[in-house]
Length: 388
Ligand code: NAI
Image 1: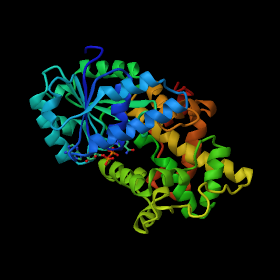
Image 2: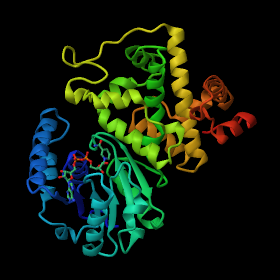
Image 3: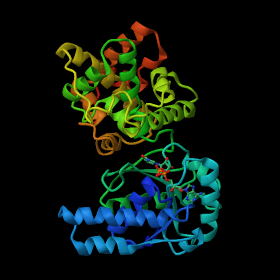
């Protein structure tokens, strides 16, 4: 791949606009297309305001800001992207619509161009199947906000050739990102491994073990997480978070480990979607920041241990199924969702036998498959091995 290939971005919404900014800041000429004719122009205008703020804060100089803006050009048709060496799609999360766009791109781009999707929940392999050259189709999963979050999950589909995967990882590094490689499996790394942070916390709340503000407080103070699960769901949007949980659960053929919770469903049905509607698990009408509620130290430790055991089990199982390397698994959680430590490194601190014990106790108590330990956790507990 030429170092300064022209980059096409399709979809000028939240993610597309951010990805276009990242590519332009890295020095690429960027073409930005959206099905809504006014959207790409509006995104560039917003970006101009963002650049002014960055200059005012001293984070960029004027020449860098102007250069970034000048490199992004809205375009009116996909055919205009014919000279792009890489096109990243960030449109609506609908397989049929994405397949139509990829089939058209496949037709109008040069044979060595790479076609990437920023999809969070669709299979790259399914999108690639719409193309005559599926070997050049790949997932490049950025995190929101794309200009700030360092992680990019690089996801080769079943038919993707080795070249595009290696080229994309190098390119992401050149853009100042942290690429991790993962298999084309539901939720990739982050959206799969992070599920219990929300699911198990809601379960603890449903059982009445602690209130949501206490659970948030425990995970922040005793767990070291930057945000508690309930305030984080309110930030992400309960509709969005519920949709991700549902999609991962369906994609794993209704594995009980990923079963969505009724509490979250009711939250969505009530219209209390989080910060964006002024109310979610917390009410943002009076105070914009949820007030912490102290929790007794021993209870806090129990809450953290239970959530952490579920997170670690999920990470270990993803490692067991070769979704990603242990190093990439840990990078994904620290760079994609700001976890204080990688889950596998965290597992090693107390050893696999400890976490296996926590899960076995939960499984004995509840008799639910939800708590089944990964075979790899059992093996490591038996051998005393380390994940990292
Ligand atoms: P968005 O709704 O903000 O933007 C999507 C844009 O795509 C809209 O401007 C829409 O007009 C345009 N669009 C729809 N159909 C199109 C088509 N056929 N051709 C060209 N443009 C079309 O959506 P958002 O949040 O930016 O998500 C885009 C993609 O990125 C989705 O696949 C989503 O799963 C993924 N994603 C979203 C993240 C997020 O936090 N919002 C994080 C990571 C990935």
